[in-house]
Picture 1 (cartoon, chains in turn red, purple, blue):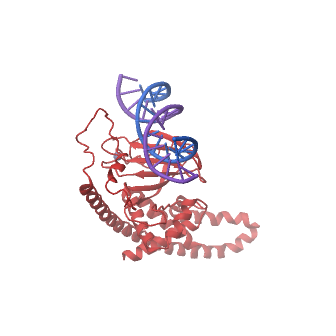
Picture 2 (tube, helix red, strand yellow):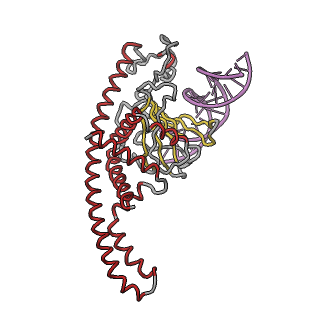
Picture 3 (cartoon, protein in one colour):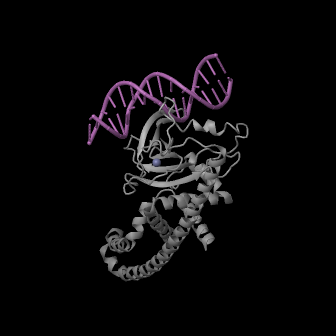
Length: 326
DNA sequence: CGGATTTGACCTGCGC
DNA sequence: GCGCAGGTCAAATCCG
Ligand SMILES: [Zn+2]
């Protein structure tokens, strides 16, 4: 059941990625108002086609045709509904899987933290005169014992998210449900757009950082790189998707990946055709490991935003409907 | 007035 | 050691 659903979903996503022009929102609309629009289209097309006399003659056939179309439409709608339910079930199983995964990751991090070092204790502030106890310099502390075998152990859980925003917001402040404090901005070498550095507003207790930068070739896409995990609830998840639509996020770094780059990036921006990120993610879909990553990715993005579940279900089913009718 | 942002200075790792 | 590039700090500034 699960594997079947997963395969199905993979196919759907691939299809959505390949077909470039229409966005999910379009297919959503199509799905919602399909019956109406079809009913409207048929009468409208009559005066446009040809003379009015022939219209009467053709009306019957058109009527029959429309009837058949309606029948087909009903059938497809039923199928669509069924698929939506299947998708919902699949999402639920994804949620379960994701929670298991989170547990596993937490266990791993605990295991990592406990034997190696005691870390800086967040409760007792050991001030040697400097109040600032930063966390990023701790990476050197972590590897002081194992400097040489500094392998593919990635210090923090890095996830990458592709967020589509309007070109209007120049501040790079991505509202993802958490409160961020901007602490820097730099221009990077191979990107004219500046990169913004954010820290979580719960500064010492939550050492999560993120970097936000526009994509090189598609300036309407912001690439947000999250570093670490929040140890608190988001202040407001109501406004989480305001002004921007979340497209996907990938937890990365828990599994050793050799030589081909440790960062697995997956984006659901089906309108991107030529970006490096899309090119990177596509060949990785062929390997079974990438499938695993995809599962994690979808599960995480789904569990983080329950509303996204419904949206995704509707969108994918809409996409399926559109491809079916074509 | 307090918190967030801006922005140039400063730090650090890395390649030559 | 030097220069570069990415990352961070913190004083100044902005804003509600
Ligand atoms: Zn946080």
